[in-house]
Amino acid sequence: MSTGHGPTPAIDFDHPPTDPFPWLEAWIAEAMRLPTPNPNAMTLATVDHDGQPSARIVLLRGLTRDGARFFTNRESRKGRALAAHALAALLFHWDALDRQIRIEGAVSLATDAESDEYFAHRPADSRVNAWASAQSEPVRDRAELERRAEAMTARFANGDVPRPPHWGGYRVSLERIEFWQGDKYRLHDRVRYTRRNDGAYDATRLCP
Image (cartoon, rainbow, N blue to C red):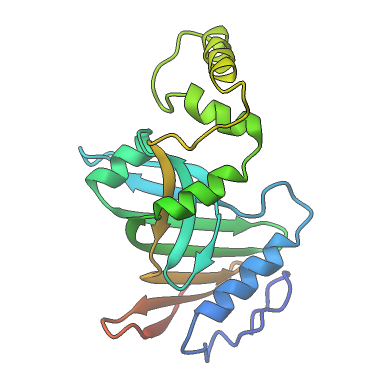
């Protein structure tokens, strides 16, 4: 078991379970109870068409055995990168728990139904601004952004704001999952799971 100063994980790092998914769910559920603004924040790393890596924070908006889901403008830099290389890495880090989770895998598009459902539950202003912002594209100043938002607010004054065709979800498959529990003297616990062709996982303990 971990000797770190975070909460004791329900896991023996020397004898990890064969199925990492319940462990993954449990750690994320515990993090979601933290009194912090966005405990579901995760770093998304991608590679552009020219091989340039980039990373940014997105929010986890669903987790199943099929993968970790998030939503964004598909014409943004990350959207273009995922169109060129449909592979991504995710990183969760929770200081309060002294834990990290890393996920790597192939990326697929969420269905239109999933994207529509999530978009419909966003605040009205967020839905309008999904139309107003050409994410990742240059803009002259804040005033220009606000003019675009005002124009879209007028366009959708009847309150019906449909999902933009360029906006939707992605799912990062759980091909590799790593659990990290911190130790105050840097002798951290790490276990990496790698999914085999038959869908089962191999677990490997790693040095910190």
